[in-house]
Length: 394
Image 1 (tube, helix red, strand yellow):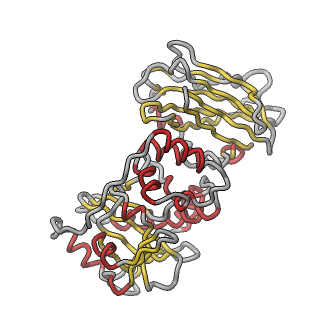
Image 2 (cartoon, helix red, strand yellow; image 1 turned 180 degrees about the vertical axis):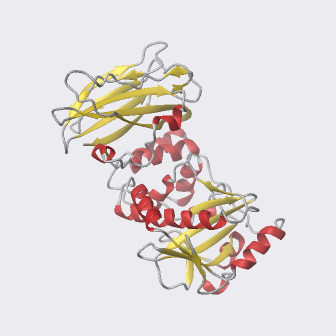
Image 3 (cartoon, helix red, strand yellow; image 1 turned 60 degrees about the vertical axis):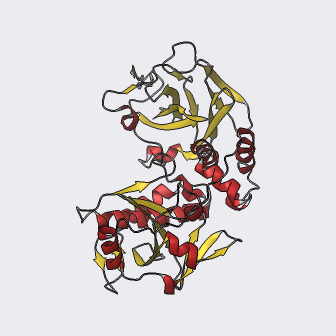
């Protein structure tokens, strides 16, 4: 990646074709075309910024995500937060050629745990081969000089109030770290369990097109600020995007589905127990092909109730896809809860298989099943009053 400066006060950072392709692939897990494009723009902005700043050893930058390491808020909200040691910066990408104003979603301004110190205006070239950082403002300036639009819940600040010289930003960042750049933010109300669960159920309905605008902001903001409810919201929306297993055979893996080693390490252990990753694939009906195994951490209700769902694939000699599914504990737990269930469910709602953990089970698995190209199925994990469903298409 190289940088070219049309204006020495700005940054114009080039994006390589490889980064464009990678960012586009990672964006395909989002549920709608608009959220996929939003994720793509944010991905390339993030890559450009981190690549550029990596050349300065005096600055430690890290990505802030509101749920684990998953930028799931891109399903609803534009923007990417970067932690620069004591300061938080939010990048706001836009395709707009007109740089007369900066629009910042209210979530990045009025949710106390999300609010940033600085907001960067970033223009994204429609072809995705460069991004232009052309101005910035502080949280305090955005609140005092910006106009709040209640229709789309954004703060709009005129370009004349933005600082155009990014050299000035680095001077302030390095030498004025005690300067107060954030306005006071009132706390948001806590939601009751009943209210939050009702909201999650409502937002999982396809008729709710824009959940962030469907309820008062204080309610929406409180839902996002609570880790438990935020995670439930993300999972219900992301589960609406089917996982393509045929793409896995081509070496293209959906975001959030990682190699087993990502969660287990080289010793292949979860919760201190050895993981049965062989899945007994190679029998007389199947070819001697390499198994494909991917894993994902899922959450049921609280962070403590986290588990690893493992999917293993193999193409049989009848060209059908052979599939095995396992569930394992995480977070240092040796055994699964005895009430947890793993189910294979058709789109019609018919339960084809279901297995429940027993006392001291360190994993459970479904019996091997087969599927043909174009077929779909659902894997449901349930525990007490919580459940999550992953949809797959072959």
